Length: 352
Image (cartoon, rainbow, N blue to C red; front, side):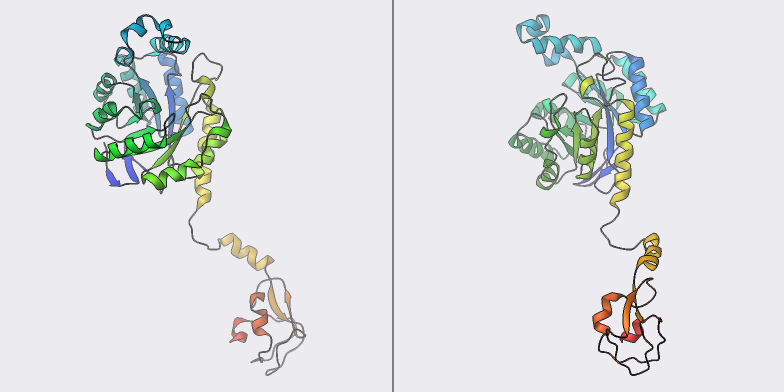
């Protein structure tokens, strides 16, 4: 269910996504379950224990994606297509599997999201009443699919890998016309992505240009870039997870293992705490440290009422129990309004 608040804030399954809220973490299981329901459940458990907000799967109707000739004879297209189709045929879950996945997600108190690659898959997911949709980078330009999904008025998370800025602009304009809340995920669709090509500097650019929540979908095989993305303003971070990168599968190498994924979330949450507020104020600890380590102006000689403060009768010493040395030069040349013993602290009243 979508609850509209503003251009830069929306909800998925009761969790608010905005720059003022904790980063929304999606554990992309995708097809890393290898068609095995027990592996899928293990990955859901990994995501839940790590503190992720959602897990995400993928749903395809191959006959709606590929031409019959290619499905019947994948070798006629390319070796890459042949390998991909063979893998996808092996890993596709049916309704019974997804119902069990949905039940298990509810048990683990984690949101179930899914990427539909075609319209029949959208219809399938609507039967499950998923709370939102993820649009794969490959479908950013698929306006008929996006249009169909928009009919359900649920939030969309749209990845922007393998696309040009002009293509992103056209899709953003299209979705805004549909009056559906959405976010964009900056993404490099290389598996795994070389760190030097991630171009995370585009995150604030996308936020400024489109005025919608911007996140990051990472396919690198390390943790740090995703943490950097969150620190650069990504309000959503999506990462593939795996039980073991050595497992069979086309996405395993660009996925994080359980300990890595848990560490990523811990680092993001710690970083969020460290950001604080854009207001400069001393903490209680700093106030205590200031008194111990700070400095004050004191009398280096006995001063009588009416005497002139000079560099010969005042000096700077620790601790900070009197007038700050910031006022040293304002004090010099003024007459003392009282008798002050050697070693006593000059007070703010002595400056007035």
